[in-house]
Length: 175
Ligand SMILES: [Fe+2]
Image (cartoon, rainbow, N blue to C red):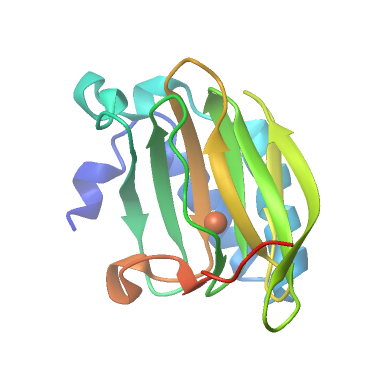
């Protein structure tokens, strides 16, 4: 990836240097995720961080745009069509995200071995940020608004090397 080019996206350079400064502290995953979420709250970019074409996404689905990756973290924009949702999954590393448009509705689950139980829900609206770290990070995310959703995610992993932030996909029944 051409990092010089990607850092010209409005607001991205500030986020990348903010995350780098936090990661350098070497805090545990949860604390890192919370600190990155706080930093994101103060530095949330506008939708101009994506091009018009990128912001359209793909009909019926969601699409990830890795904006910056390095060994220790990645900054990824996700574009969610209305009603689009992820599978139930958990993550390789800590994550922090902020919502730019739409509603990123999250359902949280606990793994009971042969099934999952729902343990919580959160509706993240524009301007809101959140952070979490494994373990206990099993969730499903859906854009419940009728506009295109855009969110900015920071993962404590190099998604250009791992392919995605997902550790495991859960196909267990929910009871
Ligand atoms: Fe996730």
